[in-house]
Image 1 (cartoon, rainbow, N blue to C red):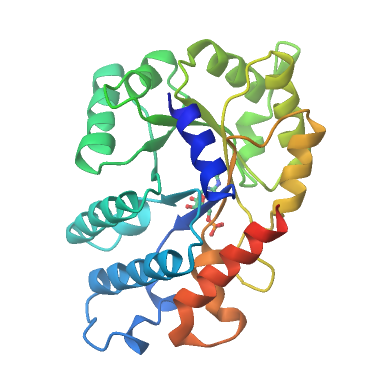
Image 2: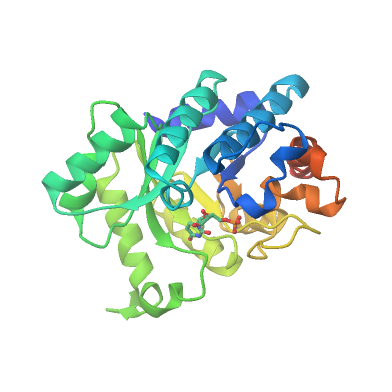
Length: 289
Ligand SMILES: O=c1ccn([C@@H]2O[C@H](COP(=O)(O)O)[C@@H](O)[C@H]2O)c(=O)[nH]1
């Protein structure tokens, strides 16, 4: 089951951090280290390979990584192959990969999406939208690869309130989704809950705890102090919200993408982008112990 795999992985690596891998070429000073890196595809590959190499050298690895496919799709078809290669190489270092693609469609199309995510890209888990209901999510959950599925529950963006917070029959829409997730769960289901609304995170944690059915959360929106571009979520506040809701930390992961990727901006030392990323990862991990 994916939830067990996550628990073991977090215990092994000693931190609950999800390193987002969302490339932004203007913030990737790869040419400082690799004069031959001309194309965007090469830059992305070098950038994330350098970060992985630094992680391995220092023995500081994130619990999981999360590339968002949009950032690769926007570059080129070839960049999708770069994404596949990066997934493979991070996995070969024992780091599970969550493909953030927010899929979901009628059943047979969800089956195709699941094959793409788990067989073609080789990801360990995927994000899905639960909006189309059970038959749109089950094909991911029952895929022979027994991979993880994170359903959007209470997202980190401002617009999350537009639908997710709507009152529904004495409750709130996101709680109705949470109830369905419990019903659909086969040990492979998790939920996306944003870091930017700790009060909602606490209530959602308490909901699952009270139902005696906790599922893994993917918690995006964590910022790294001093690095621009993040959404403002605070990692310690997130863990406190989970504790306040009565939850355990065993399988939840906290995602920071721009904050970790482009941490070199704190010192301005462009050539040290990989060191800066792993420094930020290490100090975030230390601060959460
Ligand atoms: O509710 C959600 C769901 C997904 N995301 C994704 O996570 C990263 C966040 O990037 P940062 O640079 O750390 O803000 C990005 O891929 C989002 O699409 C989210 O932020 N919130």
